[in-house]
Picture 1 (cartoon, one colour):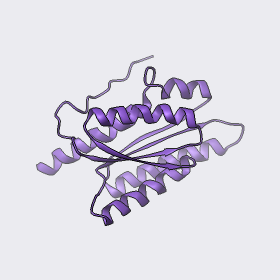
Picture 2: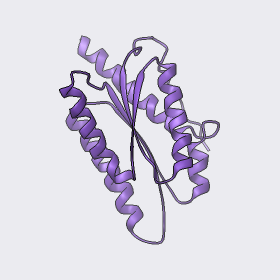
Picture 3: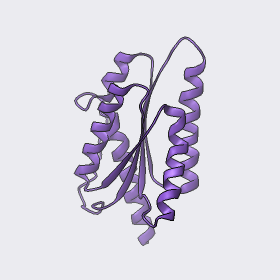
Picture 4: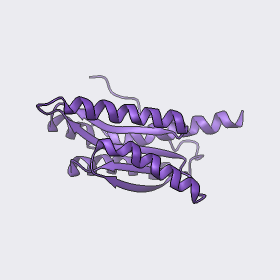
Length: 163
């Protein structure tokens, strides 16, 4: 299997003090704990501040992000980026496809509409073994990857705003 390239987000130091929203779907607590550990580690390494919001499942993540982004704007403390965390494991029904595809679609729509950099760390896997292999920092670190992706797009947004 090819190894992912993980961009270092703290190399320039320009992300210190950034405000990042992390929304986690708690349907699989242990797996999401591992995803959150990776995301929080990546955010701390970049010097970014973060808030964590918890929702029941993956379908609730996009609306929670939208609500939190708007509320933070109204308070005058906007988020610079967001990270979505969760896990959808294939079951015996079509529900897996609905949850995985609709949560991903809604996150993409939200990111484009709001122009808030968003890292999608919602795992969509066949079984629990695959989920753990992707969630653990020592193996897949998909929570950290989602945070690093959001920070990379944030850096791009800031760089392009200067031009």
